[in-house]
Image 1: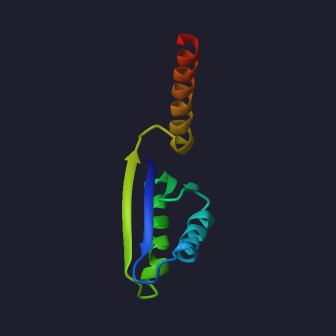
Image 2: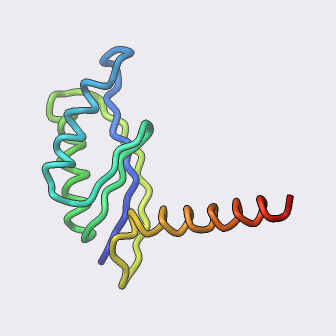
Length: 108
């Protein structure tokens, strides 16, 4: 079942700068081979439910296995029969925004 998740995996109590720690998590996600995209607040991962959840677990345990308290925020979109929603959702939004922008230029 195709699944797109947005996940933020954050270590707690390790100081103010988290970039180095977050890079460890992103490396695990990227090594999975699943489609993914990291932004300033979370990482999106797309694939089969079991594959995605295994990657989330492995990425979470980067900190937990070191005894670091870990916060995980996860949102999931399960779309039977769909693939590549990580890109197609953005492409659809961009198309709508472009149409709106061209209508506004013509209307003014």
